[in-house]
Length: 350
Image (cartoon, rainbow, N blue to C red; front, side):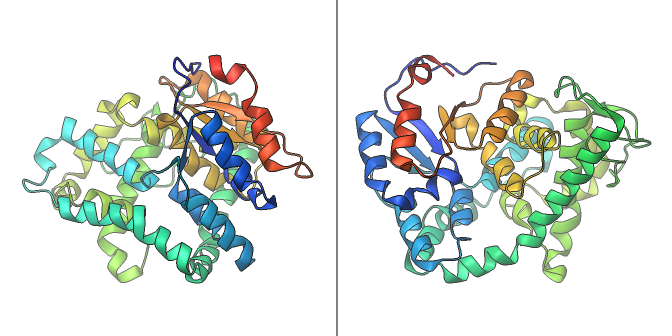
């Protein structure tokens, strides 16, 4: 499905981290002038900030964090975990309203959003050392995703499997599941019969986070981010005691239109396994969840562009157009971005 720009004023763009990280060549002023000249609003994502703070050189990190966080024509967007959880809560509101809290903790949600919109940015600007050390410590989690994708890729190559229409791709518990190996997470009440893979994978992910990790995270120290965002709205005790109904909701009642960001993240992760696996894949999949709410995504990663365009073929909704920027870092990053945005094509649709 193509993405058309009917109005080129105040176009919302996202820059991939590979562009932000190279703006330290002195191109930040050029970026500011381009935003004004072309009437662009750049959306800055928490996931990009968390990538930037992984840069080992403190002086470079400090300049780039400032460039990302400060200046006009920037919009700080909500964290992808917030957006994912919002879709999950909306799905429950539509299909299992009796699980909603009668009095939601809106103050808790406001506190979390303030922390991600202001506190972490202020912390990164003042002294990003602690954030840098924490993010470097999370490499094991990201490496797990990369290793899973490498396994998936080997299985796809071994079986010569053709993904076909991503929205219709199906699997079952027994035997080989495309791009996932045998299903390893038991879903309460599921008989293992064939279902669309997006349903199975998202049901597994959300049940694992809310039904398994959430209750034990206080003891194990596991990341309970999804639970943090959902529990202000949903009585998780009711959800966990109705696990089979929860699974039925995902496997039989959910629609892609209900969870487009979750679906897009899943689809990008899946298609990544059909390409050479890179260490940046987990972050790229994170970034993809923001592409529903912007107009253009600029990146110097041609492989990521190919992945997004493959997903676009089957996505039953519109997401941002992609603009491939020259990856030659011997050239000014500002000039490369300006050249990419000078093409007439992006003004008429990508």
